[in-house]
View 1 (tube, rainbow, N blue to C red):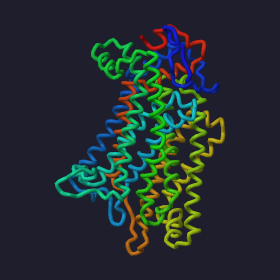
View 2: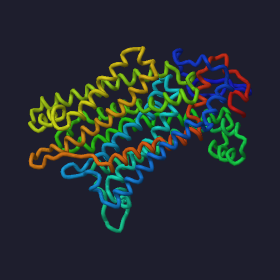
View 3: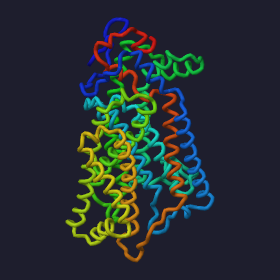
View 4: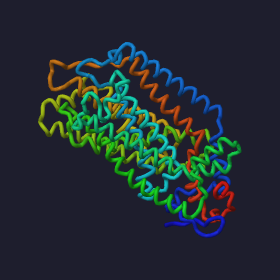
Length: 471
């Protein structure tokens, strides 16, 4: 295991330092600069207050729309047979996908020693927790009577009724709750050394006491680092299968059905690749403005953005290949309903949604073959918005055209999105960004201790106060 010279003498075991030369931070001088600049992000600014105000306003619109739906009934959501899944299930799958990049960056890339994760993984982990919290709301909204949501949970009850454990919808309950629990645990464990830095710098007695409780009395000892490193490695290894399994389980909501365009074995890897693709795009949406507004450009460097852009390009190619394979399977299978569905997808009633999906997810990301564009934060931010839009419409194209053109032509129908749907969708973004903005001003959004591991070696032997923020 890599070691870091303890400021008081001796070597303290640390997590392996696998930073390559291209992600070093030459603009960082010493440990004190790391402490000062990253903790400075915690100070509220006008831009932060404006963002929080907009997020709460969007959340208010969502809550109002939901209250109206509860009062009027689920019919105001635009549902009409046979399309009984709409914006809510589309958004559920979308937000679950957004939540995958955090665990990928913090766990899988950690195990594979990808150094570019260091400065962005904390934001991605927080994004994961809040995205899964957002996704979990939509099944409750979708059932129409949210006060009955506990019927989904298997527990001994007086009705002697149990959920159907053969249904993928029940599998979702277990997958999402497990993923949320492990992701939140992984985030908190990684925060403990950084919380100790905040504790040692805090002047307010009440806040200092709260941080002392959250840091579990961390004192930067050799024994603590040894246990921390082992726990972090265990959680990374434990979380890795969740990235592959959770969205695979979500894909079974569709793949286990016999609806045209759904029952195919490609859905599991296709959904996982799409989740990583959309998750990285949301990381850009968050990190690129953050590095500008909070003055952390020399921590989240162009090299980090370049490396993440290569990952986005790769997953875009995988997703594009999956789109083409879907069409090939429909043609090669020789099933008339499947062929009719895919023909209708690109040239029929929902052609506009399909071409938004193909343009945003297949065509625009090809620009990342250019190194100049991979290192252009403005273009990456714009591209991230297009990718988020395209991935939402991907789920729209999967859900609505399949249900509206099932195997029985007599029940073919359309689907119209209502203002209630859109209000709740906008409210979900307000909910997500409200929690993220509150997190940014309470806990370090960039990992202080891991940043100190990748600054130039000559700076590692700094005075004790600089190394740990205190003890």
